[in-house]
Image (cartoon, rainbow over the protein chains, first blue to last red):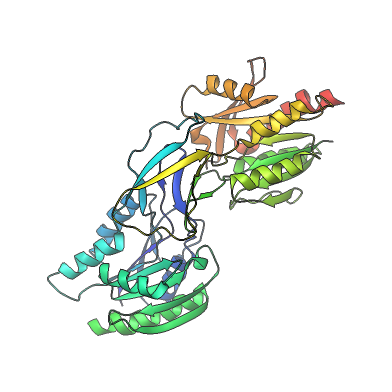
Length: 217
Length: 217
C-alpha cells in the first residue's frame, strides 16, 4: 500500500476582497483519481481548491484557496507520502499587488500586473530528486495545453522532474469525460485512455501502480 | 401578478481559454429571491451565471457566462417583464484583449489591461426611465461594498436609475446568511433585514410588492 497525495481543483488569486483570477477546474478528475487509488488499497490525501465535487469518504481532504496555500499544504503532506499526483489546476498568475478594499470603478482601464506563482509540481518534483534516499518518492504531473499537447507535455515532464506526465486538452476542464496520453521520461507514450473520468483515472492508477509503486518494493 | 426578471450569480471574463476573472457569488441570494417572488404568486425569469445552486423549479432559468451575455439576455427578457432585481455579481472588468490560446508562462510578469464591462442594472435602469409609458417598469439594484456602504449604495441607486437599492457587505458573498439595508431614491433607509437569505429575500420581496408592484395597479 502506498500513501498518495493528490492535488485537485482550481485555486483562486484575489485581486481585491471580491474579484479573483481562477479557472473552471471542477475537481472531478482529482475525485476520480482518489477513488481509483482507494480501490487499489492505497491511502489518499487530497489537497483541494474550492470545488463542489464530492470526494470519496475514504480520503483525507485538506481545503485550500490560493496557490500559495496549495504549495504550503502540499509540501507539508508530501513529506509523509510515497507519491504525488498533481491533478489540480493552480492559478499560475497572481496580482503583484492585492487591494485590501474593493477596487472602485473609475471609467478608466485598470492595469493589472500579474506575476507567476510558484509551480507546485515542479517544486515538489525538484525536492523529490534532491532526496538523499533517491527514488523513494515519485511525482505524476498533468499538462493541459491548447496546442502542441505532446511536445509541451514532455517539456513540462522534464522541467517539473515528473516520473509520468498525463497530457490532456482544455476540453477536459469541468467535463465528465477526458482523453489523455501518459508520457514517460524517455519520451514514449505509454498509454492512452479515453472515456469517463472514472475510467481514465483507473487506467492512470493501474499504470502508476505498475511503474511507480511496485518498482519500490 | 407581476413578471419579475432576476439576475443571479457571478459572470466570468476569460483572459485565455483557461483563465478568467470572476467572484465568489453563489447564486443563493438570487435563488432565495426567486422563491420569495414565486411564493407571492409572481412569474420569475432568472438569468444566471455559472453556479451550483438549485433554482426553484417554478422559475425559468437562462444560463449565461460573461457579462456581455448577461447584458444581451437580460435586456431581451426585460422588455416583457414588469421589473428587474439585479442580484447578480457581474464581473465588471474584462481584459482588453482575449488570447485564443492558453498564455504560456515565460518567467516574466504579465501586464493585463482591464476595461470596465457595461453595467447591466444601470443600462436597464436608464432604458426603463426612457420608456414612453413612464413608471411601467421598475428596477431594484444590489450594492456590495467593503466601506462606506450606505453612501456608495445611494450613489449607485441614483446613477443606475434604481427604484430601490439593497445594500450589503462583502461577507454576504457565498454565505448562507445576509444582512441588508433597503434604500429608496429619497435617500431613506426603508427597512433592514438580517438572517438567512430566505428570510432576507422574503423581506425584500414584501417591500417590492408594496412599493413597486402594487403602485402600478
